[in-house]
Image (cartoon, rainbow, N blue to C red; front, side, top):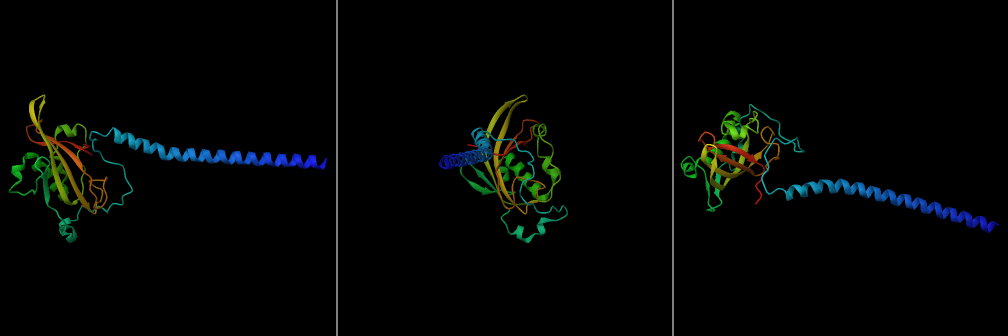
Length: 230
C-alpha cells in the first residue's frame, strides 16, 4: 500500500513538473513572439520603403530627433567664429556629364547657367540667415505644396557642393520650358536646428533640387526632394 501511495505521489510530482515546464516554455515562446514583432515590423517598413524608393520623396520639416542641437542665437554673427572661418566655405560645382569640378566664383558662375546661380544664392541666403532672400528663390509651384521657410539663424555651412544631374526641355501649359536637376550637399557646424532638423553637427545629407523657368520665365526652385535613387 505504501508503495502504491509513493508511486502515486511520484506520478503527481512528475505531472506537476511537466505542467510547470509546459507553462515556462509557453511563456518563453510568447516572449520571443513579442520580441520578434517589435523587431520585424519596423524592419519590414524600412525594407518596403527602400523597395518603393526609386523616386525622390518630398522634403518636409521632420519631427524632433535625438540630435542635441546648439542653442539658437539670432543675433550672433557667425563671421566672428574663427573656427568656422577656417573651414572650407567655397561652393563647388560638379557636372556628372563632364566629370569636372570647379569652384563657383563671380567670374565663372555665368558659364554654368541660371540654375547654378539660383542655388549659389540659396546657399548664401542660408549662411546669412536671410529667410526672405531664401524664400524669394522659390516658385509658385513650390509654395503650392509647401509653406515659406520660417526665420532661421545664420548657418555655418561648409564642404559645399552642387552637382548638376540633368537639364531637359519640357512641355507645359505655357509652352516649352527648361528644367534643371541638381544634388546639393553641405555640412553644418554647430547646427541649431532652426533651418534643418534632419542632420546633426558636421553631418551631410544630399537634397535633390528641381528648378525651372516654367512659371514666370525666371529660373526658380520648384521642388526639394530628400533623395535621388539611381
